[in-house]
Length: 139
Image (cartoon, rainbow, N blue to C red; front, side, top):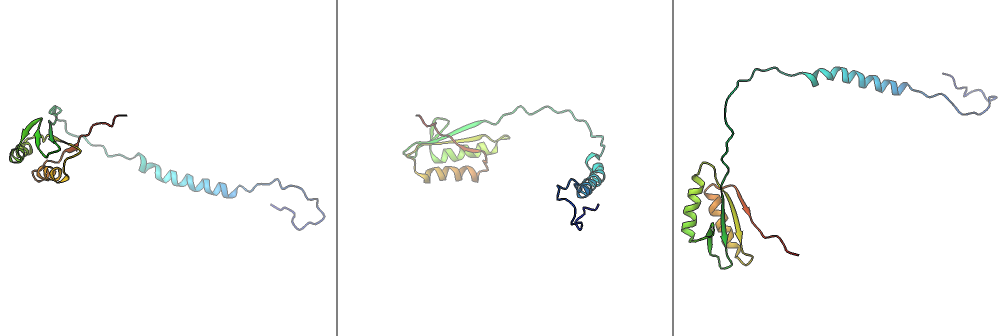
């Protein structure tokens, strides 16, 4: 492909030739990669898996509400309880086959120490599903 760069008597005109060799090289490399990689994408291991009959568990976890008022008084599902009774009920809940979800409701004036004690009591007994319940902010 001679462009006539050394011919000074030639008129200056736009070069109309495009070198497509690098583009062809890249396309060929990509083609080879796809040809070599295609079997890896389509390979699968055929297995005959055993069949089993089982019903889906319909048992939903129960929900237990533990409320703490501004004075630090404890409530188990809207029933006033002492700290010892709360710990006993947490033990019973932890032994259940499907552990209940513990919803903690605390008054905004409740001391953090009381909330931390209730959370620690639940955690030491193995209750892991715990959430805080708040009231939505009114506009």
